[in-house]
Image (cartoon, rainbow, N blue to C red; front, side, top):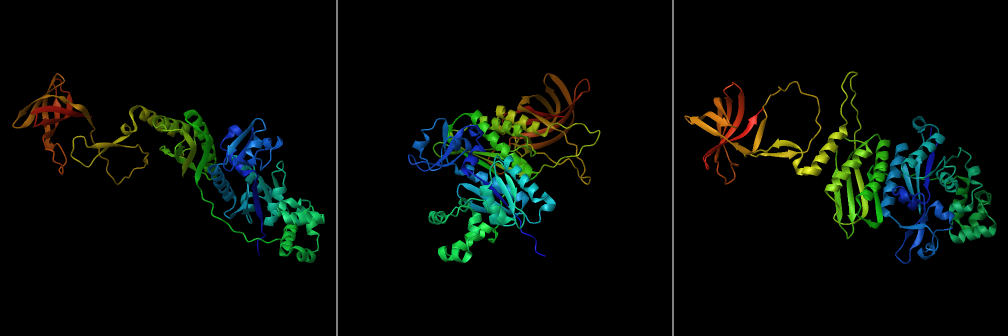
Length: 503
């Protein structure tokens, strides 16, 4: 038995304007228009409701817009529209893996094949409301219509008032739902629109009532297609596209920006959307990369990565602030792109009487503050180099390792050598070539055990001389206190020094 077709149409009116205002909320409470074209021939491409109520219309020139007071003019942002399209496709793919995107000029329109999704998302009316709510979380106002005929859903969405938001066309009632709609929803060419106007055809119901044979005889096969649209019987071959999951937001800035506070305000809005998009798929942000387009054509890139993925916006802002303060942009900023990598949001179940663990983000914030003071190259965990050099270690970034242990591996207890930089001078007496006594920091020690010697001074492949001899000593003072130390004998300068003490 063939499953009943069912489609949901998502229509976003004035898409260029909505793509801007979702990332720049300062324009939400004022009238603005989106301009396209080269100056001085710019024209209005899209506008918000406040501007429309003031009398502005699409196609107006920049000169005409300037005659209105308190209207902001914003250039069209391809980057913002691309980010909004990605976000809408991700949102739609949550409800169905089959998503088709259609080109509708300045409006964004996508259709979902939702047949068989009732068990997951409930009846069509509930799915439509949930889908519209998800779009609102992304800062986009959309109209959602569900119908068994895809073209019917599209036409009803175009005529649906913004105050309603959602609608469901029952199966078999497509013709009745389309009948009162204006003929303008078909977006006919000017010649066809004029012809129907001369015939007195103003609604889809009037078009559906025309004799099919006579309509085809006068305007050809296009008349049959239009009548099928008007009756809700035009078939459609669904062409789904892949919806990539890319956590990215971009915005262009019309006036160059050189203030960190203003930059972080814009980044905070982008983080809100990225966190919302990641949360819809039960992800957290593992890293955030900021790419700043600079005035003059340069690009400034920075990236922060905490030890554990998190959706704490305040933590991300603090980490980004510290990083951008330490690595400021060399020029004014004209564009911002924020890209995030998703990570797991797995939680650890603690026992009833387990002690409270510290917040995971506090370590990252503390390390970032320390790095801002001493430099990033001086923060990390010491790791030994594969060399015999006396200073053979480097710093690596701290990582969170698993707390589980392998019982098959024996535990090794190893002392820690606390090195002196520079090495501390000492007076050592030898007996038969081995250290016998040590005078260090004004105290006298007798050597009870010696380990060594080992030749030091350089790598075997270099031209440096092996001019040092290392000994590890176990000493005891007059009161019986033990001192474990590492001493070096310099054959070139003929002196002894204490390299460090063992814990």
